[in-house]
Length: 137
Image (cartoon, rainbow, N blue to C red; front, side):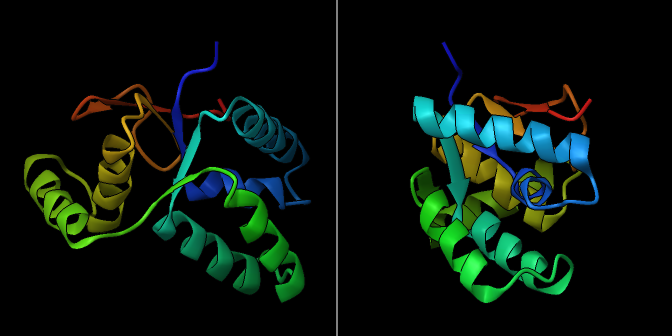
């Protein structure tokens, strides 16, 4: 059984990164697995970061990014709310996290995810009950 997991922006980016074929294949597999099992969670922050990076760095056409957004809407999407922001600020005071990373961790917590799939945070660290896993190692 697949564990309920929060998917960070870098996984979505690698799914469209043709210059990283191994990571691209891994990212696509992760996305497919969690979409089919209905165990994947993203946040509005992740989707915004994906759209901005896809436009700026990957230079994907807006139509393709729009298609991706509709596809990723098939995951549970956690909205950035005032209570989430306040709790992320609290997390940042406890753990050595940037504000944006604290927002990701808090969104994962809010969705009751036990795993956060990301290469941006310390692998195997557990932050407030969420274990960080780098799926590309």
